[in-house]
Amino acid sequence: MKQEKKAVCTIAMIVINITIFLVLSFQGMTEDGIFMFHHGAMYVPSMLEDGEYYRLFTSMFLHFGFEHLMNNMFILGVIGWNLELEIGKWKYLAVYLLSGLMGNLLSAWMDIQTGEYAISAGASGAIFGVIGALFYVALRNRGRIGNISSRGLAFMVLCSLYLGFTSKGVDNSAHIGGVISGILLAAILYHKKKYPNGRDSQLKEEAKL
Image 1 (tube, one colour):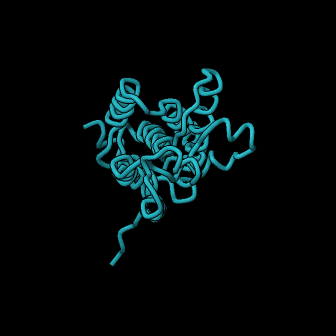
Image 2 (cartoon, helix red, strand yellow):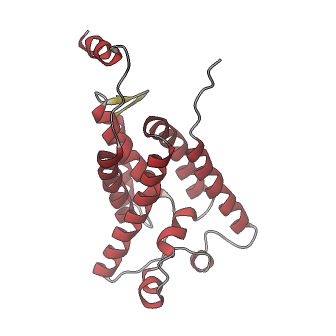
Image 3 (spheres, one colour):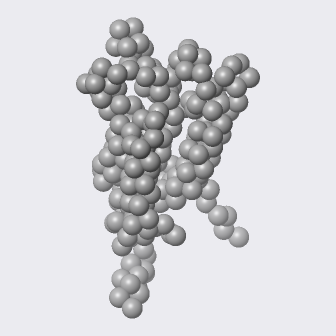
């Protein structure tokens, strides 16, 4: 019997994020900005003045409180699973990690431009990258991947960005940087699957019905 494929990288990312959160929760308050700063959260002055560029990466695995963590992990579990099974684990990891980094870089650039610096953390830049990549893949597959449509993904992104801009303490720059990076990376890495025995032609005929 053929075993059902599992999105091992998506599962791994969720486990890593939850494990780090639990470890930090036993050491202090994850809602406390200073505590999170000392454990790798993003802070532009420290990156520029002290050369702590590692924060661009470590901040992707930190979350401010249980609700922040659960919201991100739920979305990652739903969206990431579909993308990983479609493009493969290594390309998925590239999209996830590079989108997170690019989201943080855009966020840092915006902080420098405005002169307003804040301690930030979260996987949302990477997750928005996964959403952006899945949006591109869905467009390449007649607007749908499994039960997820490109319209649904676009609606999700727009609603998330709207809520971000109308709420306090949300790093919208990281979200925008993530989703743009995800789309661009998917355009580079994704190659549409070809079905054997004329399956692709059959799908085209079914789409016309």
